[in-house]
Length: 175
Ligand code: HEC
Image 1 (cartoon, protein in one colour):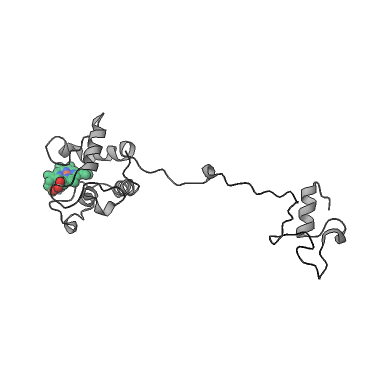
Image 2: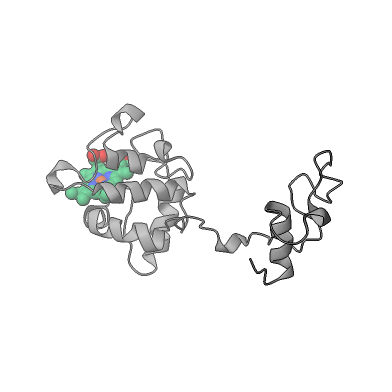
């Protein structure tokens, strides 16, 4: 066996005892770790073994939090704005141009007219009337009327979009 570097030699001494004269590094039967110059972890302090600090940025932090402007507004534009903009129905939902911000502020700052809840309660999807209306769970929360969009619209928000709205609220309802 040919050891090409000092590091390899050291490691081999420590873990295998296979390189070099055994008496240099191998503890005899009565020896302790300290006698052998080993720490509890079995790594020789001067063996050149360094632990690199973990780079936080390189760790997988999961998907970024959904945002109103990029993820949620397009869903509302397709599913809700036809009724909640053209008519005076609260909440006002119109998500084009500067109105994205106005709609966002309105949803975040208003209480429902027909339920004892806010439309959006950041961090608390189950307390957010808008989501409960979409999920059809609004009646048990003290609300009224239909699920959204109502049956007359003949469509439901797809499950993955409902999950996205839930995740958006859960993550703090960011703009
Ligand atoms: C076909 C028209 C129509 C569409 C599409 C529609 N809504 Fe509605 N929405 C209504 C009507 C009518 C009401 C009032 C009666 C009721 O609550 O059922 C209402 C009520 C609501 C309320 C309760 C308002 C309050 O203050 O009590 C919320 C919240 C709501 N809609 C959200 C939405 C969302 C979010 C969407 C899209 C996912 C949507 N709506 C799509 C017609 C619509």
